[in-house]
Length: 136
Image (tube, rainbow, N blue to C red; front, side, top):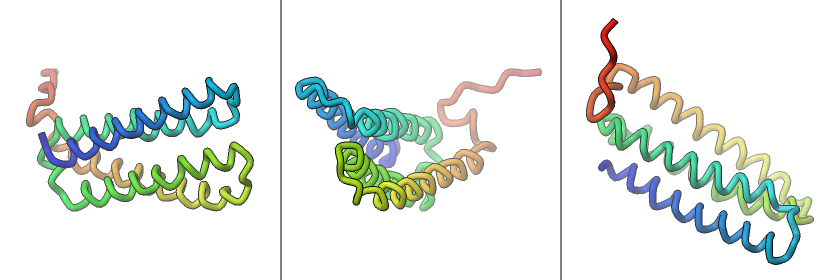
């Protein structure tokens, strides 16, 4: 498995733990104001990063590129900045809004970089463990 896949899976599991902790805190305090942050932690952290890791595991040739490494750090950094700021914003800290806005743009840049990775790999999809294309 490519190193970048392992990095994504290790980061994703950390976000899953964080998402569960936020969910438990909301349940125990009966304060559901940070529900949006809880959802973002789980979807952008756990789910999306798991998908990124799986894509790279199935397409190892592209996983070793500089773009893949830069995309990991851009996307992960954006999510790491955005989710706690969103939690603070939703629980009554309006001064966190600029951080949420700026880091959301960083996350979006990471998504666009991943789109570039997918489109670069389209010629090699079907290789290295992916299902072969059906004959027409």
